[in-house]
Length: 161
Image (tube, rainbow, N blue to C red):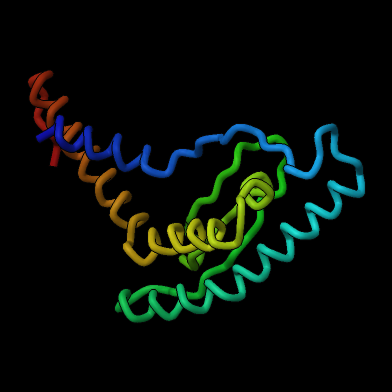
């Protein structure tokens, strides 16, 4: 049982690992980008991101309300603008339990089109709708209890009530 729990936990934690794609140059240039080209690319990526959020967020929230009988479904979409990160997106909860979907700039700038960005947003929303954070917390608690029992059994120490 412990091996299965450990395997499950390992697979669960690795399911959303960020994989950095190979850097891509825009097809219309052979050399370094000019400041104007960089600004145009950033502006286009920002417009695309806003359009995707405006289209996908209401659908994700409606689906969340249909599937989750309890819990918040008002997604907060945020952008992590720290430089030098590999493309990534993730979901989490704020202190009040409101779901957050975070994208970093590298991901926003490296998707090929709006469909890819919408797919990533839907994927992260599905984690919340599926209750994955709550499930991970339950599994971590169960794992620590099982580990504690196993350690006590191996050491011959009995647990204090």
